[in-house]
Image 1 (cartoon, helix red, strand yellow):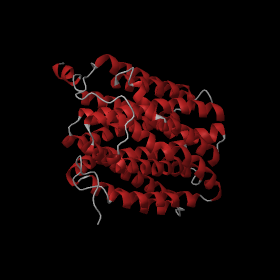
Image 2: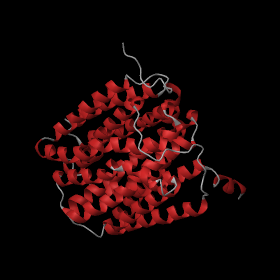
Image 3: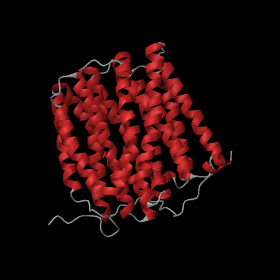
Image 4: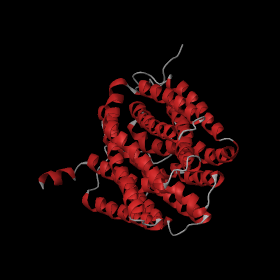
Length: 391
């Protein structure tokens, strides 16, 4: 009991608890989305592209979080965002139409993106520099456990017991609501050591960080939108097969994410990002021409593992940032991350109708640009040493 009371006084434990809830609900929404959209709503590549562009609009507007923080503490804002996301997921199955799915997706996305923005800010504020990468690796492992539970529940309840889409959405959303309220009751309001700026701040010396975030958002959309959609449309994966693929993804994350965090802390952000972007160039090139279902699935797992290295972008920023800038720049960076994300899914959705390969070759171009930026990341970033001289 004493150990439990002590855990409830730890902001790190609270962050891990919130990190558990988000994927428990969002992973189920993601895993069901393509099959629900195709089977229940009749989506094609065009509609799925539009949906994901709409889903990213709240991410593009993430900078508005800094204004909400004039009224709410960051911890309260994070919990309210989880509640909003869970409510929208609960309602998703009851609106099986194009407009209905668009509407519930936008509301869900508001909660998701505000939570991710504030959660990133709180993590960078509560953790000392030397522990952040390792902690983020642990958080990825916790998220993997939650995602495994979500995908396992799909396999059991839909595959074996024939539970409907709407019932699955209700189960996931309701569980998210209950657990979020429990966190609200159990954990105290934690004090933040540095008073955060409550205005939008853009600094020239953070330019490389902004560029890395922008390209990360562009690449991630191709992975999240079109790689998964290819599995359903091109290779005919069922919802149970998609869930099994996602389960495999997160088993790898559970096994390797803490090690990845420690490795980034040991070798530095520059080496981690160079490895990630080199790997993604190869993976996206293979996506463009793959014709075998199991090879496509293997690429998807490898792709997901490479994206775990992206935590190096945030630890790089923590090392170069003024501590009072963290909350403001968490909001700004999420907006920058989603500038391309608002446009790319809808635009590439039309390209997909003509040539799916061209979509993935576009991802190769994005990864090459990112690789060039990674060479500018210094081996030991500090305030005043934000970029590496090439010449």
